[in-house]
Length: 111
Figure 1: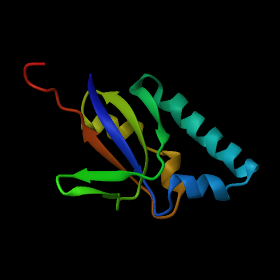
Figure 2: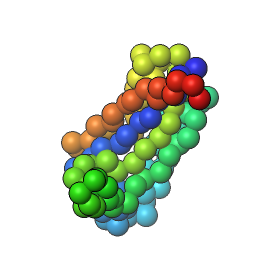
Figure 3: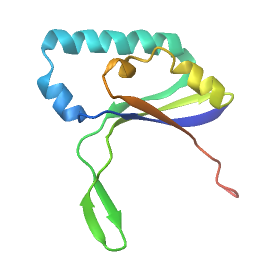
């Protein structure tokens, strides 16, 4: 099985979404995520977490990140098509402007 890193992107940060959500909306959101997790089953290696504000580190210093990444997860599947199939009907996509990026985790030669 191949592992895939999943990045959840949205126009609003995860922190802002959680702060603005009512307890009822948060409960409905978690219900949708748990239903998706049941469907994905063993394809989920790590459900991941929402992410807070980030920093970008470069040779010239540190700055605030400029991406819309609000969370991550790790899936496993035979191939990219299998990973994409696991994401069908994902609740993150119900949010206007949201998207999911999927990257194959490559093996490091010699390790």
